[in-house]
Structure formats: structure tokens, C-alpha cells
Image: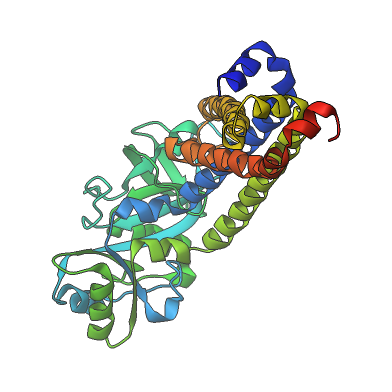
Length: 371
């Protein structure tokens, strides 16, 4: 082990190529993870902001907020279910927003939500008609507190009274208004999808003394199957493209880890071949194969840790310089730690391919040049 550390200190150039390649792989792996987290956050922020035990859609909606309609009778039935602590209505409409100082055709895509107080992760809904909280990505677009933005082809005025964070939906910025404001904007700009008073698109349900899955069954039974109740995780996975997006990125991340395994395996296999004579001498002096392999493994781990640290610094720097609302990239400690773990695992697996050669070293043949 000490010899392995001394070699790293005295001959760092020998490990330079492996360090550079692993650093590039680490940067790629952490960038992919950050991009996946950013895309997921941008698509699911509005659902996560509810901090709900259940999201209840109409049964015919295919668990889509846009297609769902909940009438007042269904809302009362859900409220009466044993285990329901609080129920809040939720509605949404996707439109273009005109912002002061921008061209008339320079629209910013937004989703206007109407919501009630059952949402734990959001401020109290605005009490005045035409007012809304705005996601802070709109602040990056130039929207200021107190400013009025014009929504949709009808140019419905909505005044921004403050900002909230991490509430994007379908990759778009959001506005959070009262249900009355949502219905007004919806009916003015989507006359083909008008909603009547008391009608919403979904219900946000908080449970009390019962599991979410059990409560979901109770609600759907109480409404005679006219509702589809999902947990927050299920509602997120039901969003268009989210599950497929995560699956594709995870496959790419897995392939990147496989490449790291191959790089480590090839590099340390070559190193092992070069050291056959040295290993023969060390074995003749009493060194065990386990100690020799531990030295190889230690070097691989140190090289991988150096590459991971550089990759993490690069990811954090990238996240710091990217303007809000541009590239969906988030560098979280959990993702960076996970990427480092996978790289270290790749280093261990890659080194395992050198183990067989180390075990086969015969001192007499290695020192005598027969191997």
C-alpha cells in the first residue's frame, strides 16, 4: 500500500492519461445527472409544490390535468371520505404571456394555476381577483413584483404579487392565482374548454390517519369509480414524457459508467503487465497477492476521486453560471455523491480484471524473465 502511494507521488505523470479520461467521464456523468434533475424539476415542480398525499383526477382524464374535470358533487363526495383531512381544488391553463418591455410577438409560455389552501407547499392563494404568485424563472425573464402581465390571446391582466421557487410545469414558468382568476382566464382564452363555477381540474387531498394508497381506494369507491386518485409519485410519473425521459437518461448514465469500467480495466491491466517483474520480486520478499492488488485498487480509487472532485467542481460552476430559466441543469449534492459512488464502483470493477494476472504472478518466472 505504501509503495502504491509513493508511486503516485513520485510518478504522477504515469497516471495522467487515466486521470484526464476519467475526469472527462466524471464531467459527462455529472452533467447528464444534473440535466436529468433539471428536466425533471422543470416538468414536475407544480405537482411537487402541492406536497399532497393524493391528486384526484376524473376517471376519464387518463390522469391528465388538462383533460380532467371535477364537478362540485365529486368534490363533496371526496371531502366526506373517512381519512380525508383537507381538500383543495386545482386548475390550470397553458398560455403565452406578454411582458412589459418585450415585443408584442415575444411571448413567454406560462401555465396559470388556480388553487386552494390544501396545497402545503405554496403561499396562501391571492384573495384579490387578477393577482398571482409567479415562479422565480419569470423574474429572470424581466418580470418584477407588482407588474401586470397579459395572458393569452384575450390579454387577460394578471398582477404579480410575489415569487415562489421550483414550481415549473411541463418545462414552463407558472403563475399561481385563485380559482376564480383561473376560471376567468380559462374562459376568456379557451372558450372551447369553458369551466362552470365550482368546477376544477383536480383535487389536492391531505390524508389523516390513513395511508395514501388506502385513502385512494376509499375515494375512488366513494365516487363510484368516477375519479382516479394518485399519490404524488404516481401523479409525477403520469406526466407526459417524464418516465420515458428518466429511462433514457438512466440508460445513457449506465453506458457512461460502463465506459468508465472499461477505461479503468484497460489502464490498470497495462500497468499490471508493466509491473510483472516488480510483483515477482515483491512476492519473493513475502508480499501477498492481496496486498499487491490492494495497492492497485488504492491507486485506482485515488485517481477516480481526483477525477470526481474535478467533475463535481465543474458541475457546480456550470450550475452557478447558467441563467435561471435557460438550460434545465441542477447540481445537487445527492446527484454528485451518487455519480462519485458509481465512478468508484466502476474503478473497483475495472481493477478486478487485473486481479487474475496479479494472482498468477510466479516469483521465479517473473524474476527470471520467463513470463
